[in-house]
Length: 255
Image (cartoon, rainbow, N blue to C red):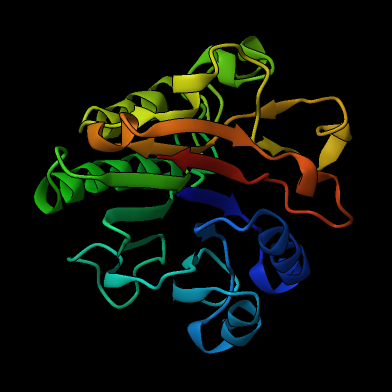
């Protein structure tokens, strides 16, 4: 089973990239973030044409998550149970092939100390409460998406430059660790110890060409899936295409 996650930075704008990649890589599941389109405009037919059924949860111009699967999805959950009608579209969960997949787009936070930063920290607390209330970590649960946090120094091209900045501040890392402590293992770090591997590069200043990136897109799993983990890698290929997303897909393979 191959499961991937990719912040596409506008699904409609990047649809040719997504369909090209799906046809080449054939993952069983692709979790998408930043679809940036309302549900009525979601490209269901185009994705079905390349073999994928879709569940989605979007809004106009911002946020939005989707799960694309070759085998369909059951027990779909859109957002937190206590979300109101104006809540942001950042969480989507579904059962696929015996695995509970939770696709998240954690808020960026904008700037350390800002209102959006506080919203980000609270959102991660809410995510942990949701996991505690909804799932058992002795069952197969996979949490993936754009976490907007680089957990460790080896996940950042220049830790001193990024110290106390958004995406790498201590409160963000602590909040994400609290989510991880629910019972998750980072599948990438099961197979790769060294630094220098990133999933996001700024469009500016030749970030990708110079490999000035951060590893902020993750696939985390509960113990039953960690035991079945074969490999996890970052596919930098699509980041080299014309008008790419600033993120690269991350893919995990399981027995």
